[in-house]
Amino acid sequence: MYDYLIVGAGLYGAVFAHELTRRGKKCLVIDRRDHIAGNIYTENVSGINVHKYGAHIFHTSDEEVWQYVNQFASFNNYINSPVAVYKDELYNLPFNMNTFSKMWGIRTPAEAKAKIAQQVAELGITDPQNLEEQALSLVGTDVYTKLVKGYTEKQWGRDCKELPAFIIKRLPCRFIYDNNYFNDRYQGIPIGGYTAMVKKMLEGVEVRLNTDFFDLIKDRPDIAEKIVYTGCIDEYFGYKLGTLQYRSVRFETEELPEENYQGNAVVNYTEREVPFTRIIEHKHFEFGKQPTTIISREYSAEWKPGLEPYYPVNNEENAALYAQYKALADAQGNVIFGGRLGQYRYYDMDKVIRAALDDLKALT
Image (cartoon, rainbow, N blue to C red; front, top):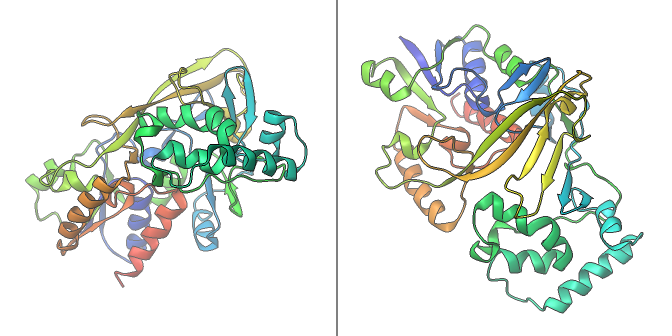
């Protein structure tokens, strides 16, 4: 009945659906949720586009991908410049001269480099055995204690001494006064929200929401010649080799009767004792002037079935298990596995689109 059954209406699935439809293929897109756009879904509440599954800032240095998304949306000039709260102190992120000046009362790059080098030398760590030692050997005691340790432990749900060193391969320090979190040439938020962008990508494509792939394929095993699957790769195979690990996120969202709650879109809370990792104030992504504001507190959580999987736990054990599942996936002649769940990889949005476009090229 269809040339392609596309499982998941997120970015990877939407790119596939758009491009295959443009080539004259008949596609059906399904999603078990009640909306399109996956985790970049935005919902308009009181005139504010709320990022329901956490903050998503589009950024890329890939000009082809930038031109591609601009077919479906106009982007504003939002620059991501988060701040971090540690106890009663406020710091700019990423680590840059504004951060170091506030932390140590210094002014020049030479002073900042000397301070970090002094702290690293005093620690004498030559062969880091865990994440804590790795981070300390990169940025010294002060930056690690105030801006890395608590936040990382909340994100992973484990003490930094229990996490492998390779998780933090580098902690970039900028010795310039620049609060732009990303180095990419292009950056912004789609005006009108991500849902409108994905809706345009799916124009002319049949979409069924609240539809479970396994129920559908059980009833209609011959519904399509090929499948594009963007769900969890281990779930596709019935977890028969074991379950891959993820971190999940829980959100507490509320509308407040004030125009401006925190003065910034993203504020990280780096103390371990503060239970949430950050607060998002959604209106600031689009320079909103609405009379009320909407904030979301984010709580990192261990994933279990029934929760949304967000971040793959990329340790050696999971990498080995994924390699086994990938071997099974490669043997599936009519199924393409894509996206962060299908490929068990943490993708930025531009990398999802790049992967989809590259996988489409392989079809021709």
